[in-house]
Length: 615
Image 1 (cartoon, rainbow, N blue to C red):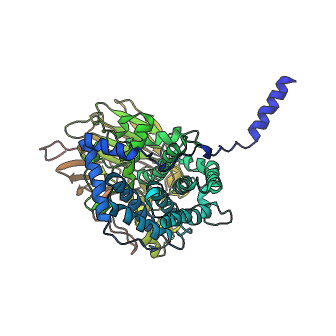
Image 2: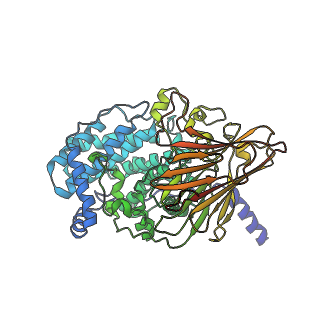
Image 3: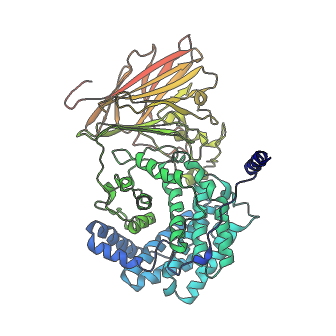
């Protein structure tokens, strides 16, 4: 009987729902300031700035930013489209830098303007709960300002901030009848950001409103796992590097606050995939400093401040190897007020970024909603090779029709690029339902969201199948035979026999071969091959030469299929609501499908040796 009883217990345990992680115990609550900092933090920042010139540059910029912000008017409840978000972010940035400047200098104007701005936001009738990100970011702003300045705020301001956090931040998030709290169960950045703001608000007022704080932390315990799902299993964030920075910043924000306020990361238990996300983010930074941009992520080199927290938390300084270009020395933004609040992670967890050390080939492939493969060559005087390839689905959060797309750098230049996303407010003002990603949905009316604006394929210029999902396979990390293949059959048409796109970097790091093999095509139809670039393009039959930054890249199609035609196209879409893309242009091959319905297209990218006129 005993084995049977044991077996039945296992079956019952499997059928029962998993236990919800417990909320942290508020009996361990520490005194103010307790969100990200302790009472000793301010003196520690001053001491480090006195001893470390590189760190002092950033601290000085914080003070400069705060001084400029002294002259700005108090915030007003002004919506941009349907969003108060830009006001929330302004209040958050003010709260962080003005509060920190006051704590570092003791100068009263910083306190006075910080209190004025926080009190103005507290007096808004609401924080726009219909777009709950606005509430979350405003909650984070008032929570940090309230906590860092609490003892020096006027009694009236202290009461106003506390009451606003409760009535405009915490209670709306806890309201079971609200139709705006769908973010609690979503597996995307909204879950992370909204729980982040709520948790900071709860921890800020927990000594005065313990019952509400417990309810908020219970909500965190029940729903935080949803926001971590996208990172699994290998850390790839489906929404792209910019959204990784956004969602991850808020998870880091409240993980750090839980530690400083309660000495725990509870209710978080399994953070392995979340931590892996930091390593993926570091991999997605190319030698140029630009990320592998996909989905709504834009191009352009930008720092990743949350990596400083990860490097500290994981004891892994190599995560910062590509951050030195931004912080050694720190280059202030052209507009002083543009210093991002996320740099608080740099200030609180500073360590000198180590120099990059890429002396050999590295290749990696990760699985998840959006599988990605990355190949990076050793550093050379001519620059390092970099190739990143993605799979995934157009219907991934913030997704584009970019399965099979890739970024390519070699010879010190980015050649294969991505146009990036488009301003949401302007699209919505034009009547576009931006997140209608169903087949035929409004999202696919936006040119730069379609496959014709990405480095991938199209059949008869048709959009990719919105519900399809592309996988990566046949990955090889052998430096002598690097390769990966994207399976695009379901993306292009399930009626195809197969549609495989194979990438093979050259071992010397100065070339790439992309081979598309398709079967089951409709004879007489057309396959379109697309490359988006910021380079100038010159055509010579089915060959092209790209020129950028004093370097040239030859693109050839050996054994080109009969009837292949090369053309140069604008990267700006045809609709009035399509944003201009003057920095980009598009190279296309159009290939007629032969009678047997099979197509083989091999395209080679080769760096033109310096001083050579032809490939």
